[in-house]
Image 1 (tube, rainbow, N blue to C red):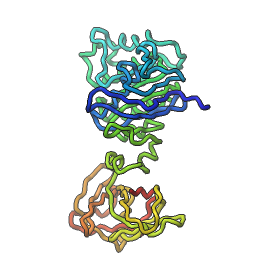
Image 2 (cartoon, one colour):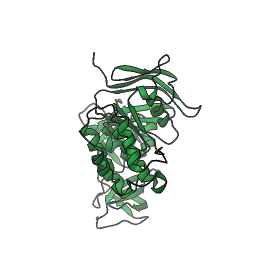
Image 3 (tube, rainbow, N blue to C red):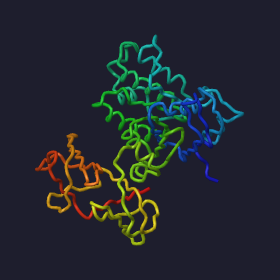
Image 4 (tube, helix red, strand yellow):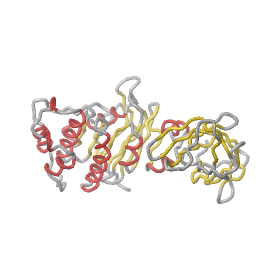
Length: 356
């Protein structure tokens, strides 16, 4: 029987009638894996972290860490018995301690796991050097968040829990710190669960991603599959990666499946779900799926155009009123205006035909 590093079995997490997550099953197979829990604010993600850390009791189910039962109906190990570090979104620093003393407090809690890093490494990694002698009230929210993360890392836990760890960090520094933290976590083989409402953050950092919606863990998979093959309309709409259009399956037997849309024509690719030929389904169409082609005979009306730095995102309208988003590189010579006709490459090829 394969031993898991961490597992939640049929876990019910309840903070209030609205703030709860039911029947959670989640496995972390190996030490050093990074898992992200993604969902809107107030859905219960932080409640899960607090329960794993032992700050509140599990309503029902079981939680295991390193094959040891730490939470169930009958068992509740206190936080100090779990060797789990939780870094809160609101940082929770000791107000009467300087930044350096807050960080060193984490070192005092260390059980000596032997991770190959020291205080200076963490301080440099998180860009904390200029504020070491300041008190929490003298630093920004983003700086406080980094200090809290440093303190948690210095405790060298068996499991690190991060609650929106980058939410208050300036955008120009956020991505650099995300990459650095991920590299460090991998280097020291520290198993981590990160809670976030930012899909880019969840996908870029984690080995696996869980989507929490409407009090349930809806999907738990590698980020690539969550993005390209959402398992429900609910998950797809939450990720807000495209629109659904009505199509008919005209061939689901060949290696390349074929769908038909009234105006877009034939759409080819690989169906993520099995539908017999003749089925009427809804296809998830993402902005990167349509390719701009000025020479194409397939023309759609431009309704809107937004500049996004490296690209434009156009909104195109079909004759039956469907609004379709399309990415176009910002260096494209012809920038189409509203009401102009916009060429789309036909037939349309989409690697993953996500249909419901």
